[in-house]
Length: 191
Picture (cartoon, rainbow, N blue to C red):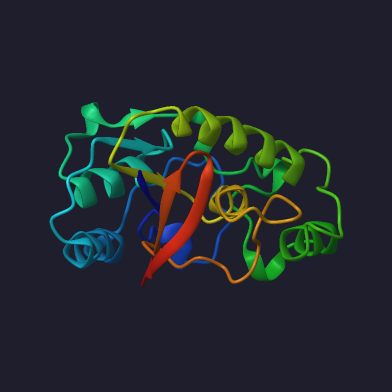
């Protein structure tokens, strides 16, 4: 199976450097163009299934890239963005120190109160991926978010801590994994 994992296209919150989290913000014009460009870069891949976070920016991106109608996309809460709690909609450049440190170095600093922990993110994404491994797909698309893609990559790349935090994934950057018998190998990074 080939697993195509991507982050959604740009939104106005991305452009304005706001912590989007669970806010349900649609793609902006740039985000739509990014998703269309990604569709062209991927080419004629036929996806047996398309999974997305239930947030509209991920569903829109999934629909554009795959050609699936939004109602045919499998929405899964386990790949929704991290819950930023009271820091939702905060400007990245003005975050209080505890949140800034956690979001920059989650391997060192704990999540502030009201913010989802990296441990929780790793748990829910690994459950999603273990279930996905049982499917008989040739090609599958998974569209998620800039925070939650990091434990997804960690699982698929067998990262020691369970996540790959740096470098930060770009909007509509696609990580392509070859998956067989529970083993995964990154075969392409489409930017």
